[in-house]
Image (cartoon, rainbow, N blue to C red; front, side):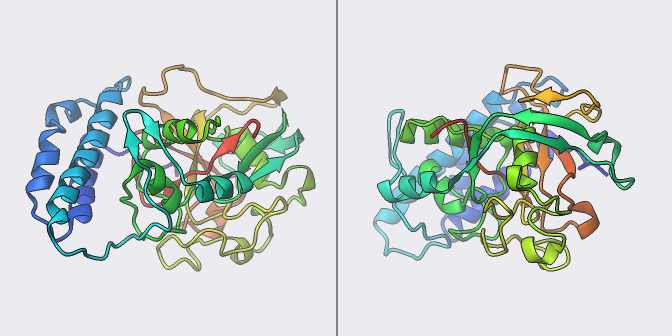
Length: 336
């Protein structure tokens, strides 16, 4: 069954309350109320199919940053307390619209962008257990590209954005509890910090890389026919995500392409997108307005999904404003 769409008011309002309170912990809740005052409920009151949520996302981001600023001021005169999440490098500093990333983190990021040689492959599935949205199998041809060795970690995300409201916090765990919109803002700032053109992978790029590209051995899961070798899933994850790259990689050296977290792609979700007609470098994105709320493609399965829901061809979707603990992302580059 596809993921149920979550009401915009409930999702954003609940997560705002939970995230701000999680961040402030023992500090006075005055800052929480101040943040919510900056995030008027009238903005959340509508939920039309064509709603443009850019204002919502911008105000939520601003509220978070304002709360962090107030928290830092309040704690300056108090003894330092140990943070729940301790980044390995200094957080990104902002000067107007300038964003910075440490040389060490930038070098690691670029080193872990894995080259995927272009070619043709069969996308979709011929198995009778495949859902209609995963059929028919069809030929797709792609140019070469780069894709992240792992899902984006909390360490990298926090270094650029200055905040981290993930469930299961740790530097080397995959970033979660952020929306597709948040991911786009992160990528925009990361590109300013690095001078590169990072992006989300297209669904076709993701599927090709997950199957092993030109080195594919046609495994049922990404990297193995035995899901326990390569994935954190319902059978072993104990209802939580885990640090990245702790299972075996696939043929290309990519980790967690099955399990751990579902991963957003750039494409808009359409149930009956696949046909038998061959496609070249496909990207289904009917609207050029990236800030318009739409259903986006999810691939890879997650830590609460069973083996029969996690085969490499599985696809799902979630709206671009939804934040969930089992959804993350990885980066792509057309060229380094």
